[in-house]
Amino acid sequence: MFFDEAKIYVAAGKGGNGCISFRREKHVPRGGPDGGDGGRGGDVRVVANPQLRDLQAFTFKVHHKAGAGQPGQGARKHGAMGATIIIEVPLGTQIWREDELIADLVNPGQEALLASGGTGGRGNTRFVGPTRQSPKFAELGGEEEGFWVRLSLKLMADAGLAGLPNAGKSSLLRRLSNAKPKVANYPFTTLEPMLGVVDWSGEGDVFTLADVPGLLEGASDGVGLGHEFLAHLERCQLIVHVVDLMGYYGDSALDGFRTILGELDAHTPELGAKPQVVILNKMDAVPAEAVQEMRSAFEAEIERLRREGHPAFTFELDDEQPDVGRLVWPVSAATGIGLQPFVQWLGPVVKSLVGLSSAPVGSAPQEEGGTVPQEAEERTGHVTYRPRGAAKVFAVTKEDGLFQVRGKALKRLVSRFDLTNEEAIRYLGERLDRLGVYAALRSQGAQPGDDVDIEGYAFEYH
Image (cartoon, rainbow, N blue to C red; front, side, top):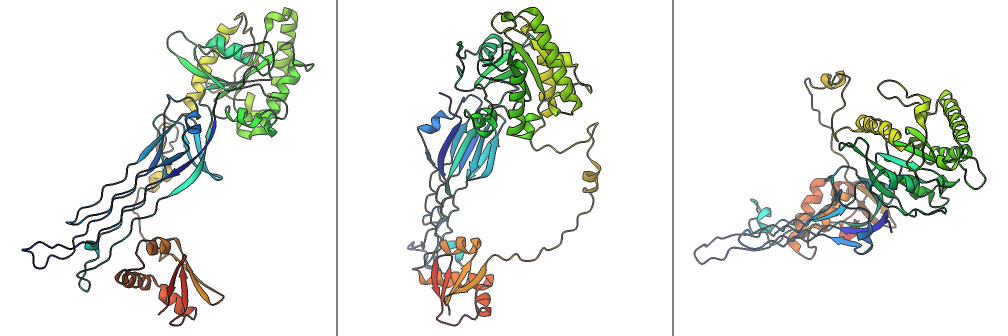
């Protein structure tokens, strides 16, 4: 069974607490504080592994948690960092957090950070100052980050086979590659996507070919799991229509082609605009005159689509469009008739399309001839830096007599201290004052003794 969807929980490691410690050696009369920092929590990272086939492993292991940082110790010893975990996924995996795409892994070895470990708390040594020479408090480790993510696999293939059920897609993949998909004389034989490698030159020049289960009318709306199957064609550079010359359940071959073309257009505009060619399969079961007649009908249909500007058939190779006759190929997957010239033509076409679409990740855009755009040259001159002004990091509101202070930076600050430690509370009060929290509360009419809620932590204003 092919698994192309999974849901997992990832959690980074908690940061280690800082240490409260003082030197107490016999011959050091004024030893002072020497508490070390806590270690940073481990991260959760994901990496693309081309050796993996699908997401089946995540049906057995759902929770992935990194190691926590170790607490600091005396003698200024810092705690060890938590262990980072690496999650390996197949090429073409997309990672979603709710409705946000946070990673799309399309290159071998490509990595992405999913959850960042909590920072280690500072030991009491870090809080020594002219007016605080023996602090008896330290920071707590930062909280871990954890959430559910959805993994979605879209096959990485150079070309993809699309067609109605029982059109012969699996037979074609079996004939052209070493893949062994199930082949039988009934619809929906293929229940999961398959990949094969096609050697088109006999000298090691290859491209990958994807076979997806048969599509039905309404596939773009989810009929017959159409959304899941069409998604596997989104990364292909070229789509090969496999048309049954004998038709499908009363529909003519041309009607079937129009159905699949409409579903590709309806799924996403980008998918419908990909370069496409047509294979007229099962020519061994149809008289030669009928094959030629059908080929002429398909060429006329593609010519009509070209005149209407359909992007799937107006693509260019070497600065010119391929002849309409090169876009329609009668073949027989059962006997192999017509496949050799088709593959020898298709190989260079796929190679050209893949070369046009492949650009190094993160590379700067270039104009023709490899020169840097003029705008980029203009940006290499003198740069003037100007202050942006302080960003507002919190907001103060009053509801039912309770003052509420909200802000992510404040939440991180307050959560890092033990609020049962009087020295820690005093230090926190100084930080809040420098950030302008007290001034904002006074401007809202706060009086000594009023209750203040700072991101869920209760304080008394004074």
